[in-house]
Image (cartoon, rainbow, N blue to C red; front, side, top):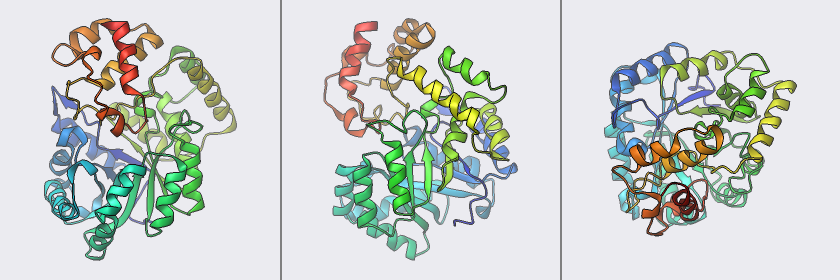
Length: 367
């Protein structure tokens, strides 16, 4: 299935290397070139990634520099960019133009949950995507999903034409009561849908482990922490693609080193993963993946993921969190105490975090 896909590792385009606040096109091009040269060809973007700059980077660093048949490009229909049915196709055409392509290989209904699904149905978003597929402007229609397994089952039952499902699956979220990674995986299998995995390293959390957890994986004598997380996710039956949002060449080279000749985790490695999970369960950490969906619409301009990272790092590594909180992340942006409790962040959070309450916790620590 999906013969155009060459390997099972995809390049997530939401964490490109930066030069200041802008994407570093030179480094980005080098990373994408290396990825392609090593036989990998799947790229995943969305209009809101990098605050609207990801699609531009895809055009400049990938599309303009490589033949169209050499890569597979996925884009998404995000709810913040349409209000009514007539908005959807013009927005889609705008995405094609920005990316510089005539079609998308995969087009996903973005971040589906119970509330958004009703909006997409009302605006005939799915039907319009299927029409665009008939016109040859989309090869495959799918969804990315952030809600309960029950909601996913409802969507796949109502729209059996959906060809692929992108879910969050990693060893910390598999048994999570909020993310329900394992339960959502089982729903995909029930409906016989190929699976694309997002957040296999949980926004970097499983790449930058607490010392105790890091020691457990180092005892295996080989492999970075990220390698075990990505191989864990890629090893499930039905998973055709595992995405990694790579930010530098070192990450690209590391990922390709074990995904070129992919092997599932063995029994010893799985036991180590279970031990790492127990380490995390013993710590009081915020389950933020730094997707940054919450940042763009915050009226108080709070860099929510960065403030959560400060609190987590203070717990994990006794890192100089207070300096970064006061001198970097809140110097020109809102403090945790600046929150006006509007709730916009919680509505868009894929992890369903109680952000307003968590910001109180951050404020108590740092303000």
